[in-house]
Image 1: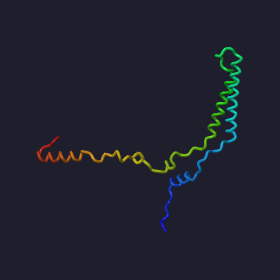
Image 2: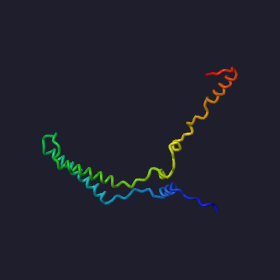
Image 3: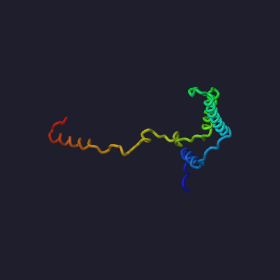
Image 4: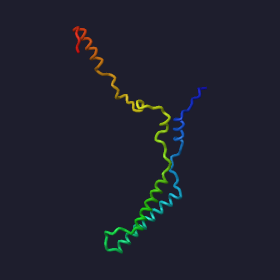
Length: 138
């Protein structure tokens, strides 16, 4: 029988995330209630502002403070509903703390290595010319 191989933490992490179903988290009752309450409050604030503008001749007046407070509360409720409906975040890479990767291995691009350059041939030519003339080229 083949020898048993130890599974690494990276392999376990990848297998766990591959087997997990990708579905959205169900929204809680509080999240749904906050969403609908924010919609109702925004609609009511809009209707109150329209009603206020029909009662007043000056269009430059701001809405009453209760309408402004209603809009702020609706905004906070909508923000809570949106944030609480987000499922738990998953790691970007499974084994980023497990793999002992350095900067050199992570960003290694062999296409940009300079292996063959003229330095070797120029040094050989310089030695041949120096040996032929008997002098130094520096």
